[in-house]
Image 1 (cartoon, one colour):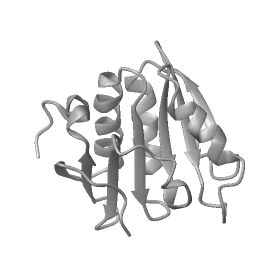
Image 2: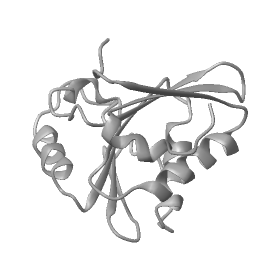
Image 3: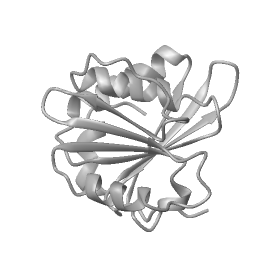
Image 4: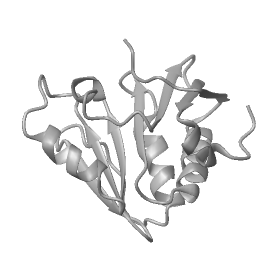
Length: 159
């Protein structure tokens, strides 16, 4: 499955959900608005944990929950809105693809997408794809692939 053509890769091992959430918080603190993040993982892999940290790092005090049953959730951050989509339950994008296209083009939104296979044609090449692979009960290998223009999101992170 091909997700994006990229020039940059970054990796780390998370030894706990706190590590995964802390990475999200650090990335969230670097967001400017207009970014698109694609989260790739199995069920229970840590996607919502990462988003919880991302929202907190961006200045949101909203409670973060998985949008599996609602398809999308919004979290108000200090300068923009984080729009979190989960397409796990959809077989085809339908009208949600147009909504996604509009949100992606809004510079005052940060878009986070889970299970984005059905909307690959809508996703921009300039995005950060975060792959979370469960390697144990608490451990995860996290690999980020990203367009060079988004390098600031991981600036200073150790591999």
